[in-house]
Length: 454
Image 1 (spheres, rainbow, N blue to C red):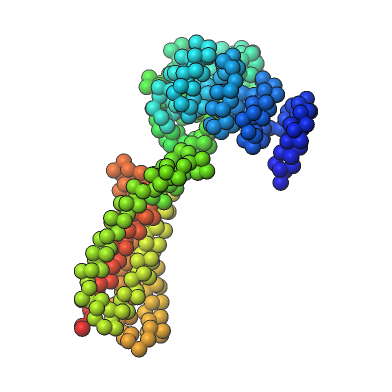
Image 2: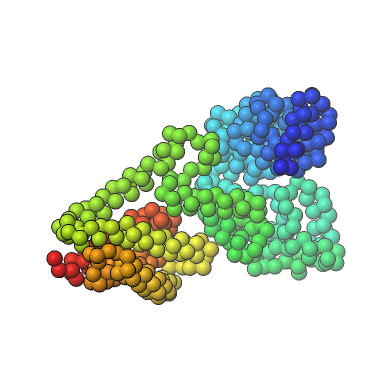
C-alpha cells in the first residue's frame, strides 16, 4: 500500500514534468525503493528518471535494478555515462551485472571503462561461475603488520569512503598473506599507540578463490560472519565476500534445490520473463525420465494380472493401489525433505547414515503400525461383504512393509547421492515417489500371492 502511494506521487510529478520536485522526492527514498519504482517505467521515462538522479547515487540505484532495465539503460546512454556508471559501482556489483549481459554489450562497456578497472573486471570474469572468486569484492580495508592504531585509523578515514565495508579490518604481512583480522570496535576503543598486531585475531576463517559459493555461504552461516576473506592457493588475501552477497547466494541455491526437488531443470531466469518454450524445455527432461520409469509400475500391475482378475479379491486389491502408492510416496518424501535439509545445514553427514537409518526405522515401525491398524479396522468395518480378516491383514501388513521401505529409501538415497558427488535434491519427491510406487505394488501383490488362496 505504501509503495502504491509513493508510486502515485512520483508518477504525478513525472507526468507534470516537475523534475526538480521529482528529484527531491526520489532523494527521500532508499536506493532499493528507487530501483523498484523504476521497474514500473517504460524505456523513455526510465532514462529520464535515471538522469534526474544525482551522480553519487545513480550507480547504487543501478546495482539494484533488474538486468533488462540495466541493459536498456546501457544501450540508451552515451559512452561517457557508461564509463562513469561502471567506475562508480563496487567491483562485485559490476561483475555480476556484466555476467548477465550479451557479449556485444559487455565489449562496449569494457571499452569505455578505465584500463585498471577493466583489467580487474576481466580478472574476476575469468573465475569459474559460482566460485568464491566470482562473487568477491576488492573494496575492503587492509593494513600491514607493524602499524599503530593511530596510523590505521588515519588511513581508514582517508580511504574508507570507497570501501564496501569497514567493520572488519584485515591484517596482512609484506607478502600479502592474511595473518589476522581486527573488528573496527576494537580499533576504536584501543589506545592510539597500540600496534594492530596486538589487537588482531589470528584464527581467521577464510575461503579460497575456487571454493564453491555454497561452501562459502555455509561458512558464513556457521560462524555468524558479516564478511569472509578470500585467499589464493598461497594464502594471500585477494578479496572478501560480504553478507549481502551471501544472502543472494543462499536464495539462488535454495531456488535451485527447490527446482530440482520438483523435477525441474534449474533456471536463472525470472518466471514471468521466461518464454513458454524455455519453461517447457526445463520441465520435459525429468518428466520424460519419470514417465519412462513409471512404465515399470504398469509392468508390475500387468505381471500380476491373474491376481487382479480373480473376482472380488482382485477388485479389493485394485482399490488399494492408489492408497498404497500415495502413502509410500508421501512417507519417502517426508524423510528425504528432512534429510536434505539436515545435510544443507551441516547437521547430517554421510557418516551419520547408520544413526539416521536407525532413527527412521523406529519412526517407520510406529507410523507403519498405526497406518496398518487403521486400514485393518477400516476394511473390516466398512469394506463390504467381500472383505475377510485375511484380506484385511494382507493390506495392513503390505502397508506396514511399504512404510518401512519408503522411510528407508527416503533416508538413504539423498545421503548416497551426496557421497557420490550428486545433488541430494535430485533424490527428492518425484524420483523417490516413482521408486516407492513400483516397490509398494510389488510388496502388496507379493504378500497377497503368498497369503491368499484362490
